[in-house]
Image (cartoon, helix red, strand yellow):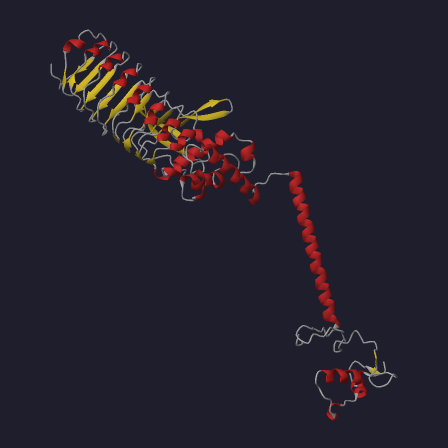
Length: 468
């Protein structure tokens, strides 16, 4: 009170160290009356002004605005809108933007509610359910392989491993369980069937089935292939329709695979693929096929050793892997297969001796060891194979003498012992083999011909290198 506007400004300037001069005197009334907005001096005296209405249609007029002065701002933070049209458009734009954001939020909320309520299937699965399902199947597979392959979790993390490739195929290529690979994969499909299909896929990727001689990889949408097979009943070659491995068809129709069907379940029972140029190591994963009774893969290029996990093939009755490229010693675990009836391991570079545990295979009907590097004596425990009817020991450097316990093999019908270094006399106990029909001897035995005179079933006696 009692001060004009000029007086207030003058005081503030002096406080900041500014000294008023004569040149600083300004005719305030004149300056305000000349303003384009038509501001007039009021009756209150110098320094007081009267606010008057501004024409809103005028684009050239300034709109005074009260702002908080910031001495450090240097005039950069204050923006003046000079015209009303700009203000109108700006306000309209802000309103539209707010409306769009609100509408989009409401729409997304309703969509989420509908998905949760209806749970309707989609032909194209969303990322989230597929991710959850992938994790569930991965955990199921890791659990299934526990005790067989304990590093399964790291193998699934390695995109180049056959295990990871098979899982990726199951999700991104295979449509056997449903075209959308949705959650129903686990809810409606037998987990054993899912694991079975996965195990076969692992074998295909591990042996690079696309390079097999036939039926290793689908070439068209049918997934079918034609193969020529020898039919012993007709004595001729026949053409058979089968399915490629890794096709969308039932895995029980894949070439060389035979399943046992029990109601709604189908379990792999036999795998037979001869001369198909299959390369790789012994398929340990087949141990997860609970009904597998026959594994017959002759004339291929399997390499490496026979793994100790062979003992996990609990239903295996016939193991035939001749004429491959396998090496190493036979693991003791092989002789834990109490259900084994046929063992054919010839035509490989197996080494070491024949384990004394051979006597544990009490149900064995045929033992075929030929063209190997196995040496040492024939263990006396071989006499425990009471049901053995075929014994082939050929082209392998077995040594020592023929054990007298061979006389216990009363069911033996065929005995081949050629190109070994077994010496000594043919034991008298061989006279107990009443069912012996063929006896081949290409070794330096000292034989007593009288042993064979009373064999009523003997139809072939071949002793070209024996001494009498």
